[in-house]
Image 1 (cartoon, helix red, strand yellow):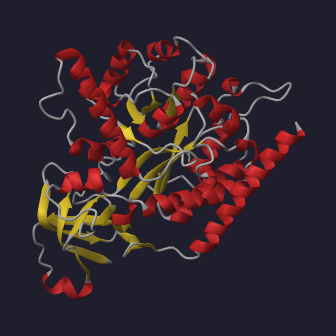
Image 2 (cartoon, rainbow, N blue to C red; image 1 turned 120 degrees about the vertical axis):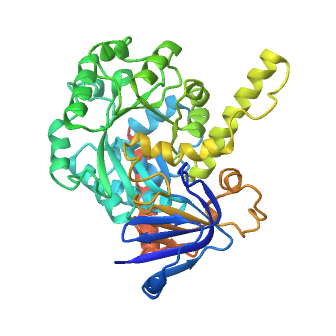
Image 3 (tube, rainbow, N blue to C red; image 1 turned 90 degrees about the vertical axis):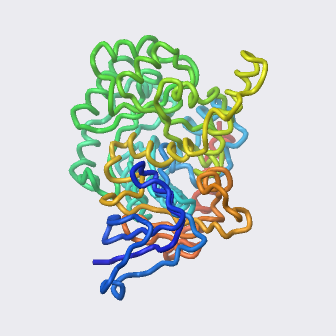
Length: 457
């Protein structure tokens, strides 16, 4: 069995029983972590083990990106100046309609590879541009080929209806397609790529459709994730009706949630609903201030997602830092208003932000027993950070270094399921330049096609 020993590194385990180690070792056998402690003696097994010198390195659990529309990778930066209303009109009713399966494939593959490059080992790919099974299969193929651990959240497109067609809000999630995926490429509930549902929810669907989709997710034991926010709800009072029907609880994931009233948020928290915040994009496009602090006051933590590479960078370290900074700013402003001065000490420590992109992401996916921390028995998903780099050195507080100063430039190595996916600062992937060419070609064609349609109209 393949074995790897990382020696003499700073270990941030995110496991409360293990804690942080100033000089510790991590032993991996096959796909799993088998030991984490200050010094591991391999004895006679040393000759059969890859020994990695961790001196000057920080080892952390692999990051978990809780929400990203990976299908938009070929359009990086294209939507950077759009408000949310422009995004609905120009992306979902516009660009999304000219995507071919090959566009979905290369965008998903390249986007997932970039996530690995940035230190993400688990990606929640919220795919809501799959008008045909071929589009869906292309996305799944891209995820599998990338080697990333992923939850493929199967969604549905949102074009403007043609004459005689129903509005997307009136279309139930397609049971047959979900069952096809569960019987085929995503049959393994503990596999590298698993299935979830990206449903419309009561904010974007009729009540009948919401009831159908919630029941479908519960019947098939799948996470149901939905956007909440962005204009008036399609079904006012829909959440209350879903709650009355007993359909809201663990396994329901709310994305954004900026406009949720306090009483409804209280109820959702009490029922075990999880929340995924995409702080940078929420502020850029006009969703409102992230609900990070509102959740923390209720004793629960958010997960963090990138959301849109068509708007911003795919670096989860940066987005977690934005979430932390924004919440501290809101807390500081509230204290000035109430008390006339800023708080005596910070309201959100840096370790909180690291939880949002590790252990909390695992909990949202129901996989806290498998990923999210460096714990013996869990899958060996980890990131090695070169703390000798000029922008990180010297390190006084390793957690602060990771959260407040680390970037893509410092991600030296990434391991997923015991296999190195990045070493010495380079992705271990063949034909990367060819993949980049395909991505560029896709992006150019998409923009040209939609511009051509606009001129024709």
